[in-house]
Length: 41
Figure 1 (cartoon, rainbow, N blue to C red):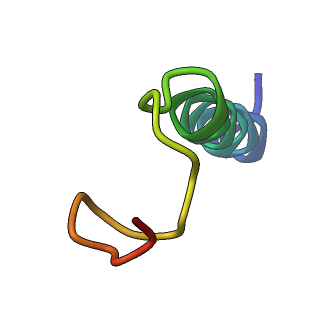
Figure 2 (figure 1 turned 30 degrees about the vertical axis):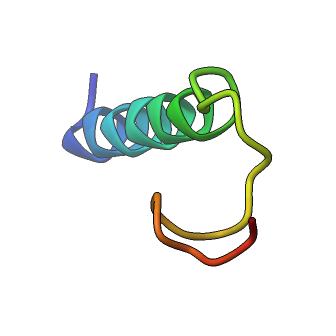
């Protein structure tokens, strides 16, 4: 396995983990683009 392939798989893994964290493990409130004090009610 080349060094470039390792880099690609690492970046891909980080991207998938980020998407899972953002969309699957989101809090029960609607996503309003901020933290707890985002002002969306």
